[in-house]
Amino acid sequence: MAYLNAMRPEDLLAPTPSGVCCKPGGFFIDPTRPVDRAVITHGHSDHARAGHGAVLATQETLDLMRLRYGDNFAGSTQAVRYGESLDLGGATVTFRPAGHVLGSAQIVVTCKGTRIVASGDYKDTADPTCTPFELQPCDVFITEATFGLPVFRHGNADVEIGKLLHSVALFPERAHLVGAYSLGKAQRVMALLRQQGYDKPIYLHGSMEKITRYYIGRGIDLGPVELVSGAKKSDLAGTITICPPSALNDLWARRFPDPLACFASGWMRVRARARQGGVELPLVISDHADWDGLTATIAATGASEIWVTHGQEDALVHWSQSRGLKARPLAIVGYGDEDESDGTAPGAT
Image 1 (tube, one colour):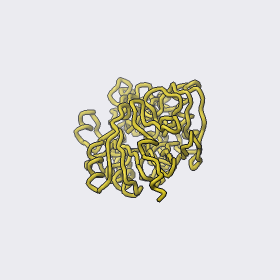
Image 2 (cartoon, one colour; image 1 turned 120 degrees about the vertical axis):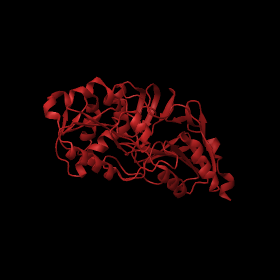
Image 3 (cartoon, one colour; image 1 turned 135 degrees about the vertical axis):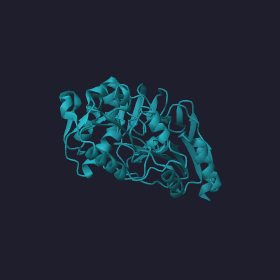
Image 4 (cartoon, rainbow, N blue to C red; image 1 turned 90 degrees about the horizontal axis):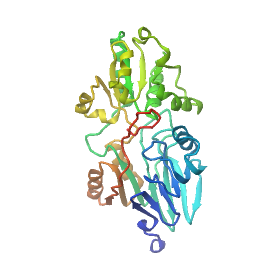
């Protein structure tokens, strides 16, 4: 009869205009506005904002926030290891790997027999640059839905990297510019290139340097890396450069010989979107779970209740309800794609 004493999920976590709030613990998960106490899932700036009183996150996430916002991004900080549990006002909080980017975590909140998992952003596919996703059984699963439509099936990232290398071999006179978000995607593309034997220097837009150097400092082998600013135009033929997506159509791209625009993103599954952005070589590589990954994860958690946040909420809610699960959208505004104009603002796709 223990279930009779279990806390109702909505009394443990509740959506508010500032994000999901833990009532017993007095904290918010990935708050969209400054709060007294924040638990942060990962370093992308639509989830990790400055101005909170106290921040709990993995060491990598805290470091990445510091790189972006400066030393005084929060009143105080506390690093939490994967598997470590903390008691916050009677609620137990545990960080588990989310497989999204370096340092990303799912937040497991338990209290009085109720277990809720807030996924943050996650993917269930291999990534050489971060700790793999770990499935967490729970009563309630709060899932993202960035690619929560059946059309989004990302496929094999290695195949997409193969397309890039084939194009480089086919057009040795052209410079290949790969648009990729600064945190996670850029470093994953580089690591995947190395896994397929590409051993030449990979060039970087200057705004990519800080985060990439941080990854290298954390032991992620990305091979030889050079800044574009130190190279002559004639030397860039046949090379690969990683840059913010916004740079693909910028004056900056004119420094390359006959640049070929590529874009690594789950959104490249929609060919019209690639054409609209002037992308010649779309690469379907995402750091989010696709439709199959989302639905398989929901089923595997064993959760009887699903809360869906940021992205294609309605389709995933409908899918969950059709399987006999209680499901609802949270409709919290503030998560999603973001501007990468300064290069240090990590992207979300």
